[in-house]
Image (cartoon, rainbow over all chains, first blue to last red; front, side, top):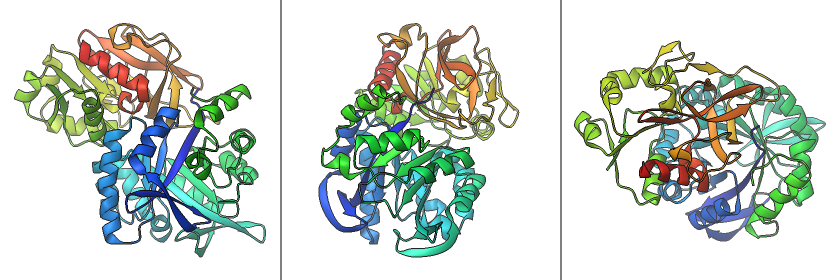
Length: 251
Length: 195
């Protein structure tokens, strides 16, 4: 059977990896390619690079960085951040990205999902959704969590799947940065409604948090950033521990 | 020199990058003369088999590929195009491998696409020298080549046991992506270079 995936996420600003706490107060942690190579050696199954540069120059730097990443690492990687057209996606594909993730642009023009999936295949399209719980309902946000939409998480995830998304990467803005565990019940509900893989993001603090979201939460993959960047949880140790508790992972 | 066939299909850059990491020289080409002159040929492929086959036909390279006597490696959709036919768009393919390509059935436990790392069974022959059964490689696909006498490695997704790799004479194919399969994938590519 296909294994559960462990995915370190690297936020990149002007070519450097940074990690925000609740998307604010960024601090630099290292070179994007070197960190990717290190993670792949440590047993990461995939990598996600998110470009959080706001400027055009930053975007250009990112495309060049994607070329370097593609040369340097031998596991699949997804890139996201600031992709607003099929041409943006094409540039990243040409630079060597295996998948792209779209978030805000998919919300404002959902047809973009269809367009990219039709051109390059569903396997290339990850739809990222940032949502928060308001009065018991999970509502999607855009622009890095700063703007509320009227979209319901589950309805939007289903629509994205129907339009051709290959995976859903859902981040709970209520859990992100807290290190108190993932939104397990929400993932379990998403997984039961979707036929495409679900990547869990936001809230990892311990090995147990990751085990829970991959079992009770039924997520296909667990994404995390800070616990990996600061070496708190070595990926090898994490995977050995997951395997011991019966989770099917690649060692 | 390794020729990677460029027929305007998907992410071919990563195959070239993987060869570079192994120190091999390669060219991306759709030139029949360059393909015929190459020591080895790789047919990559990502996306839709019907569209890919259409582009391969337009490139006029089908007969040239079939005529090659040096080692040829099809990867993912590239390998599917080397099978008899594909259920995807009901596509007639090159017919080098003695099997058809079918869609995975939808199921709750075995999601489609089959995406991620899975283990291979009974890897056989020079392509898998030093690669034990149970090794993990990276797959991304919704259609699979069936088992046949050309099967040289298997993989299971849900209830379906399919060909993870095929070989007929000098033609090889992997359904998985060796260029994205870490150390194991690099070893498989190196084995191909050593053929």
